[in-house]
Amino acid sequence: MKTLLIVDDDLSVLEVLEARLFSAGFQVLKSVGAKDALKILKVQNVDLMISDMKMPGMGGMDLFAAVRVDYPDLPVIFLTAYGTISDAVKAVKSGAVDYLTKPFDGHELIKKINDILARVPGAVEEIDTPVRPVFSKGKSTSMKKLYGLIEKVAKSNVNVLILGDSGVGKEHVAREIYQSGPRKNEPFIVVDCGSTPSGLLESELFGHVKGAFTHAIRDKKGLIEAADKGTLFLDEVGNISQEMQVRLLRFLEDRKIRRIGDIKEIPVDCRIIAATNTDLIKDMKSGRFREDLYYRLRVVTLTIPLLRERKKDIPVLAQHFVETFCKSNKLPMVTLPDETTEWLCEYPWPGNVRELKNALEAGIVLCRGRVLYPSDLYLIGLPEERLILSESSGDNPFSLEESERQTIIRALKESGGVQKGAAELLGISRRAINYKIKKYNIN
Image 1 (cartoon, one colour):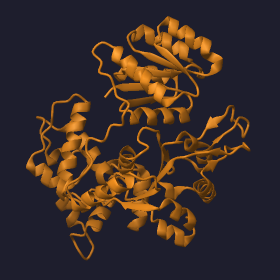
Image 2 (cartoon, one colour; image 1 turned 135 degrees about the vertical axis):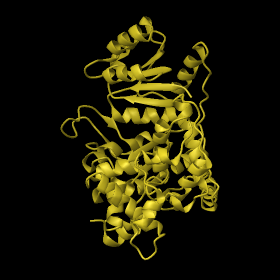
Image 3 (cartoon, one colour; image 1 turned 60 degrees about the vertical axis):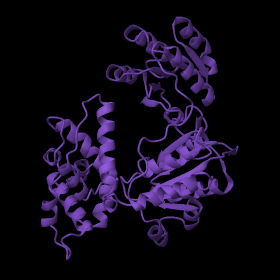
Image 4 (spheres, helix red, strand yellow; image 1 turned 90 degrees about the vertical axis):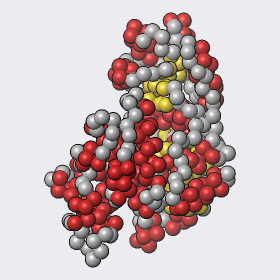
């Protein structure tokens, strides 16, 4: 997999480029400025760089001059507005391989990249087709059933709502649907509704025109518009405000958007996949989530089970994560003995697949002799299973929920009650641990 570095001060452009390049089978690194790009080049091997021409501070030409000194063989493609075409032409005459004018065609960009990489000595031409995940199906009955539904749903264009706890792999399932569907050669745009402040989410989704509000110094295309002909993935959709729920509902009904400050409506044809770890039924009853929006999003619902509910998948996932991490970091392969696999299957994994992945990667770094033992996992903060169960205070000492509750309490004690620190110990997000604390009524 070839690695591309994209440099642009416009976050929406970075998102669109990342989606397009990832779907074409490239590994993508992003930078919001020239100086950050130079820092990335010092620590990462990059096969090709795509840069905006006009950026605040250090511009594209200055970046190109610096790259030519330290990385003379690195191919560079410039993205330029019509007003800076002359600068792009000068860059090409100075050694840049090509340029594209904004707005650019995604297929043309992929073709240029493939042609350039094919000319690099020893390079293998990339094909403009999406790459399916190395690991997808599990051995458990629940996951086989889930992927059977995915195969059926992916062939259509219906909206899909993915439910599941934090860390179970909701985005992985969304990408599986996208890569198996009729829009697989179009953009896959991810919107993190949980981490984007409500005041910015409207502009991120719908875009704005120059002068619409303070600091709106130029027109900006929204992520919904960027997903035209492709797929829009709304992650943690249960966290959006009431006002945004109304705007999103209107788009789902009319399939048209209007940028902030504009009077013109723009038609957008995209598939909607939404995901959440919240109880939307409960939120609807309490009035926090609109019932009509829920039914618009939930044409088909897919529920991903917790990792502890599908233990047959743990050995397969563990081996996959170990092999992937060792190969990507050019490390000697690490072995998982039977005792480690058994321990992994017994641990309750409150952070689900994400916690398993993080724990194994940290364990690989700490283990000796290229064999990963349970003792290596204790070093990164995972407690022994029997210790978790012995502290259980519920009526059933072997309750998985009680085990998870006690694990969270131990992490909170270890971090001095700081949720952020406890979340890092568990390998889950701050939003997830906050949800768990409320769920288990932890004071």
